[in-house]
Length: 327
Ligand code: TRP
Image (tube, rainbow, N blue to C red; front, side):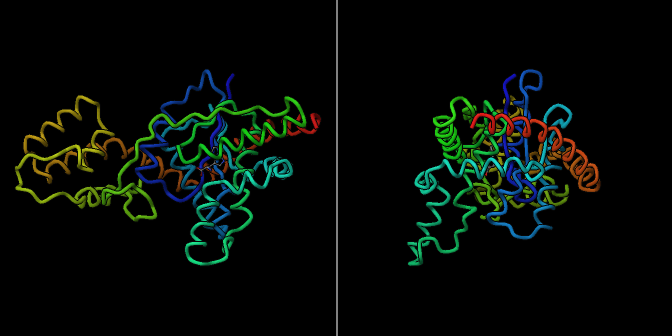
């Protein structure tokens, strides 16, 4: 069976953009019968920026609860916390001794921090920790320890994946056929989801719709979407409106087309927002309910993740044994 593996960085409750561009397509795309899937929460990757253990723990719960609420079936995949598998960190050190430093110098995230420092006339490495610098190595260890064949990621992670392949190749040059080279697999729907202000939805722009916010808050946020102030019943331009952009992600193409036509025919923005809220809420209500259930039963989350951790550890131990044998 082909092994699919992907990591999810815990950054707090996911928003609608994460849901539409990553979570929903990833879950819909799972093929439990033909693929052996490993999904994990990359909690130690978050340590490059997050220092508070309590916050990290809470973020991990929020992310785990969201994926489960959206339909991830923990019985049929291996769902675990990275920190529960210490062999990953063991392999990361080994790989770091094979990784040319120059390769890491070229990583986008590191380079952009350096560029920012230079721009601000600071030391190039000001405020940059070695964890951020070697982030790609830890990610390579996540992937290579489990002999992943395919790694579904967003566009922003392609470079990391290429680096994982490069690192595996160098390791294999010394120890033939020890590591499996992973293939990248772009997430099926990489559409950029817009935020409430029309820019890309992102926490750093403060323009998000939190995925599991209350019904009341969802209503308020949808009602507050900025629209152009044309005559109430004037024809609208759906293709340049955030309202239609969201709507088409929650309905069938036929429904979306009807909505498109109605807007062009002069449906008032207020009525359009009401319709949008209805379709969103219909899909998100059960997700919200499940999310709240898990967040109120953290022991259940702990048990699920611990169980996945045990299964992952079994694979990891065997794999580490074989890597050491191959050296
Ligand atoms: N770096 C990824 C992100 O920020 C998360 C991640 C960590 C990951 N390890 C991974 C993704 C291994 C795929 C495979 O989104």
